[in-house]
Length: 288
Image 1: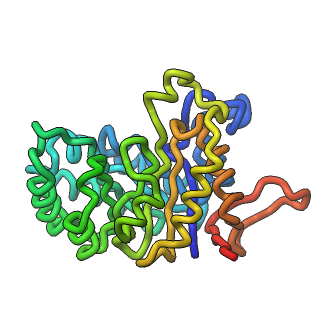
Image 2 (image 1 turned 90 degrees about the vertical axis):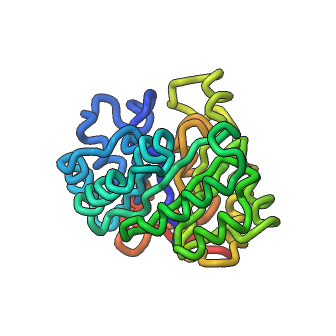
């Protein structure tokens, strides 16, 4: 099965001198990042739709075969909560599609936890989501919900009928991956979208400088490996993104995940003669 693994964003406090060489210009970060990972989830689009020129620069800074996924703006998911924002969403999608072309992977609709004041039950939200997805532009999309009780047949049916992926999370509010598999088949598209987020508030009590791993995640990574081998529908392509809040330093965790899964560079990748850094453009998970 094909698997791409990257980080959520490519800049963070503490990465210079640890992941990026000391003294490297920030303008060169993305190109350097793309020498080590074949995908990245753009976090900055959560705050606003980027300019067309910014998106083109992302395209130009990365090699053939690199893939970007990106969050939809919070104005759509958090503030307007899918109401009256169809044109705004269409402009966002158009900006990303035109700027990234074949390098655009998945656009993520990331929703917050909704209390009963926002939605008394799941149904009003799901009805709104269904209507919104029916009017969406063409493209590959994923939906993330953080209301654990909403992960049921109604949500999965809405997503599955439209080929939209359910974002599967490693997050303290959400079910563990194998617990989720016991309840349902969570892969609702021809690809799976996985986000290793961790406990933001818990880890920020220990650090806000993301220069080293401070939480051991070997057991959790083993769970995700099992999850990825057991999904029933699709499962031929996985996009996995690691946040700094997961263990403390996303690049190191992403590499640990690659090693655990047996991800290797495709035939177009490059490996130094000394066995050093590998350019990963597309990975393959080899399961015994």
